[in-house]
Each structure stands twice: as C-alpha cells, then as structure tokens.
Image (cartoon, rainbow, N blue to C red):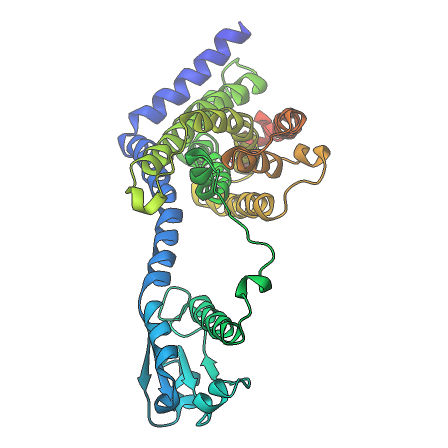
Length: 395
C-alpha cells in the first residue's frame, strides 16, 4: 500500500509537470543552453586574452628622437611601435585616453654607448578600458626591454672577449607533457563545479515550488490532503517527482557542456578535448547533491503560501550554492573531513576530476555521505513542516 501510494503521488506530479508544455520546454532547452554557454565562456575569455596578448602595441612617446635604432628594431620584433607624442602625456594617461606612455631622456643614447644605466619612464594606466577594454600587455613590454638588456650585455662581453655563456651556467629546456584531457580540464576546473552547483539547485527549483506553494495557490493541494494517503507518503512522492525532473536538467546541462567543449575551434582550446568519462563521473556526483538541494527547496517552499513568495525565499539558496562552489575552487579542502560539507565537498571533487589530479577516494565517499546525511536531516525537518492540519489551515 505504501509503495502504491508513493508511486501514485509521483506519477500524478510528473503528469502535471509534463502537461505544462511551456515549463517542459524550459526544463529541456534551458539546461542545454546553459551548458553550452558555460562551455564556451571560459575558452572564449582565454581566446580574448590571447588575442590581446598578440595584438600590436602602439605607445605614445616623448623623446622618441633620443631612442637608438637597435632599441626600436628590437621593439618592432615584439610588435611594439613607439609613436611621437606632444602635449601633457601624464594627463592623457590619467584620463584613460591612452593605456601607457613612454618618456625617453635626452641622454639615452649616450648612456647606453657609455655603458652606464639608462632609465626610461613608462607611464601606465592598467584600468584604461576596463578588464576587456583597451589596456596594454605590460608583460610583453617588460620582456622586450629584458631581451634588449641581454643583447646589449652579450655585445659588451664579446668586445672584452668574454663568452656570454659564462653568465648562464644552467639552461632549462621546458617540455609540456600535459595531455589534451588535462588541458581541457584546466578550462573546466572553475566552471564545471560552479555549473554543477547552480544547475542542481535551479534545475528542480520551479518544480519543487510548483508542487508545494504552487498547489497551495491553485487550491489543488487541499484535495490531495483530504485523501487517506499519509503526510509522509505525499511528501516523499512529491520529492521523488521533483528529483526525477531535476535529473533531466543536470544530465542535459552537463552533456551540453561536453558538446560545447569538444566542438569549439581548435585554436580556442589548443586541441584540448574534454573526456566524456569526466561528464559521467560529474553526473553521478551531482545526484546526491541534487537530492539534498531538492529537499532544501521543498522545506523552503512548504512554508510559503504563493509561488512568488517561494521564489523569493529560494533566491538566497542559489547565492549560497554559488559561493560554496567558488570557495571550493579557490580554497580546496586541506583534509578529508571537509568533503563532508554539502556543495563545497562535491564541488571540490568535481574540480579535482576536471584537472585530472589525484582524487582521494575517501573524499568522494565523504562528499556523497555529506550530501545524503544533510538530505536526511532536511527530510526530517520537512516532514515536521508538512503537516496536513497546518497546511490546510494555512491555505
């Protein structure tokens, strides 16, 4: 009898949800779009940063006539052009009209030729144009000056018949042994944990609200509460329907992320490929987390009387999930017990999986146990709130 009642409630809620074509289309399409968006976002930002790093640089310069030809030639190799400037260079930089400006002293050439330190002044405003606006690739300018110093120093040593290699006792040949999966994981290590937390919370939010506060508002919950079915059976049946419908957004979002990651242009990802096994593992880890968040959403929605009220009450949950997922990315657990923390523990494991690092098996177990234990506590609290007398009189 208990199983029959649970199945009936579960079937009833699923049928109601599936009949709403607008809600169903949002349940299926929105997760795919979100997954694709997050998959493209990180590589797109990386591509933007790389394109900025490769763009030619033009620096307005005062005292350009004092610059030596070999210095100008070396800057040209780095696609750095010095352009003569007249006027108040400081004011232009402060106003953000230019990202940088160079001031060359009149005795620059004489100081270099006389083997005395020559100082040029680089005025910069790194906030010109915002994060993705104008700006200037200062590292390239610094590297160009360093290269010039090395060339001049090597020339001075050769004049004195001193082998420049004497100043470089050790050279380092760096070889990149990272696999394509690891390079793809580097893109996913921040976005994927964040995406899992958000979609696990948001995927079942509207359904959880609809089967509680929504039914209160429509007056359909009262008809269900006057049946012989127990409060526990009604709650568990509704929760089962919410969890079932949450699985769709979780799977679709993560599959959309995988599709988006693997079909991006190779020059965006450096040939990196995100393995499907990572997505499968992430989906399995997301299941207990989704169940826990479904319980929290049900508990929050039970106490409200209208759909909009429930939406407002659930808003802080999304914020909390986002913060916990970001914390796992920037402050990873220092011991296994921290994996017990719901959301944080799961996000930390997903981040480790993404970069192909060593994943502690105990951490995986504890992250699952933490989510399920928190869900069990939430169910106990929710059942106390899901009392038909209280619900009927509060409608």
